[in-house]
Length: 565
Image (tube, rainbow, N blue to C red; front, side, top):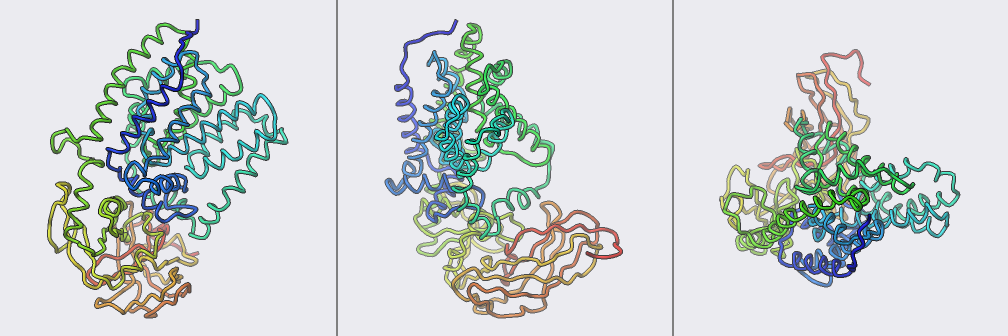
């Protein structure tokens, strides 16, 4: 028999709200949160690796409270609304069992306060499933319109929402025969059009990053075990197997439950398949938590033995999560026990660097984490200048920041400087810095290869035509500074630099007018060993590494070819 326990919902929601508000106030920002805060200071219809929902929520909260609490305020509210939505979807007879299952899931605790795209995605996908149940039962145009709005919300949160939408539709194809159904994609596409237009204007940076630039990382077979182990962790170190097995054994009794089954195993299976070709993050499956909770609860609720084990496993889970939450607020571990420290000492780290930099802007290489943390905690300008070997980050989409530094005195911070002063700000990683009195960089200049052949013979000098574009509202002058500027080609095999050389004997022009394009003829030498390579071009200031001025281009080098197309 199902257990009827007379407990109310609202004390649980109030507890969840308060504990996450306290957590938000007394926990320093994670690296990604600092980046999304930077994005919130430059609101747009899109950003480097995600749509704009999370930065928008951060912008709302930080406008009210200038602290970590402000960054996370609307994320916390979104997590409460998500929890309420899951409860509405499940309609549990026993709130104690329901919340024991929910609170035994690790990612639920992180998602309760962390300002990341997964939280708005969970919010919109949860209420999508609530509305979807209503739409299955009653074919109403008004419900279809609501679904269209929620699908747009999912799309603006994180692209991973498309996976759960795909499997929900695949489980119930008869919906395609409803006239009202077609209102859903129409409304979603109309509302999502500004983001798609933003992607087109900026050369589809998000899709290039996830599908090409980032996908070029060297593959390791441990990606599969990392994925499987990561899922057992984020779904609960003690309860994950119980929840997954219960969800697997539950037999769907309605169209909704069949859709939830497809969604759960579809999401988990999709990312398992992806782990055979590239690295996956454990949190990417967060959207599967909602169907997991529903199906597991439905199977466990009327089975006394399963109920007993659910409570037994929830207790150690909650104790571990309590200790983990306390650690995020207070660093009580011995030094060196947390090699991936994201939330301790970074405020002091930023203030230590500011004490050296003064009012000078601080420039970092190849990292979104450090300039974002520095900008938030030091209340000063921090920026990343990415080298040609780097896949890129949000700072590549903010050319006005780099433009504002030209010719200024800056503090250049990098752990790989050939010369400079070594110091350890905040007691964290050793860094080297030096003061550059006439800083110059040219990553804001965009380089695109025109009609590049993909199949080329080894050890051959090739002539290419490239398009040079100045996206800023200022002329870009290559000879204003004290150091010479050149254009380099960089060829990569996996993550390693295979070849680098000069693309031109001298720059064809000394200045590019704002908003204009120029075509240059350049050279590229292919490696002497056959293989699948990638290459790009980058402007190099004398004494520094070549920059990141365009996307990676594929390059297949063979022993010999009869013709080049």
